[in-house]
Length: 338
Image (tube, rainbow, N blue to C red; front, top):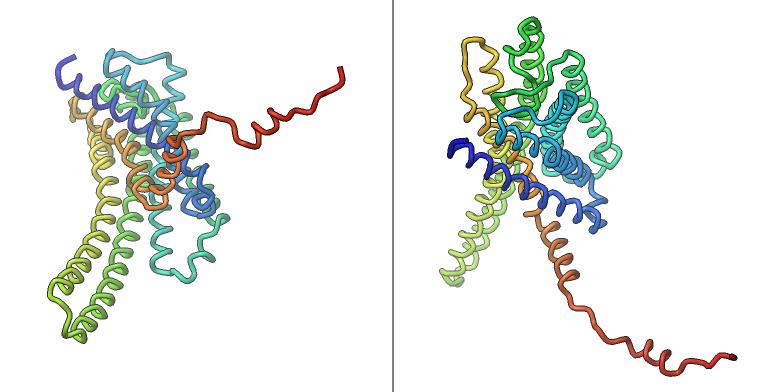
């Protein structure tokens, strides 16, 4: 391996470790905090975390072995099973992100009717669709024998057209339809819903700003430093809303777009995809599993507080001596007949 492939392997190891630890921490927070379990978005987050953990323990290690050894890891049966999982998990995770964006859109645009529009039953129906959608494409790829070891990507996934000359038209049709119904659909839903959320958030911020400015005008004796702090807080509030929406959409686009474009470009027979570029694109897709816990969960106040309580509970020293009540019972034990 050259230095570039060594760096790819090193970054992949980091992604595997961070993804596994962070997603397991989200699982622990979900199990520990009953308030998170009561909320409908918690089900979407749980489903996304489940997909990320399964992708981390199944696909990522085999891809790492493939990059290091330049050979297919395991037999054909194992590779086909892992390729089936990759198609299923990638589809499921994209649709879960779209479901989270729809949930936040309903919460912001219809706050008074949110609890009647997004109940646990509604969340389970949405998750049922994501699983059916994902399983359908995965099963279709397996039935059409389009899953195998891809040497350019060094992973078990949809194989290149050169590996299936007779079924190239099937692979082209399936690849275009698959990415249109997963990546493109999720991207459109994310952009439309989050941009509407941003529009509503800015509208509310503007109303608050108008009320604040009117108040500041009335308070003629207010100190200039206090007025400046109020205006600075308004600017921070608007910037936070923009940063959150940019993070949701940006991480999705950065991690998935290069890989999807590469898979579509390779459908042209005359195009040669450099292995290093293909593996970097694959690494970006895997890095999304490491980013999701921080983007959707761990940086939120509810999860941070849960992590803090867990840390305090684990780090809190336990008394080594027995309690006074226990000592009293041991010191005044009732004699028994011998």
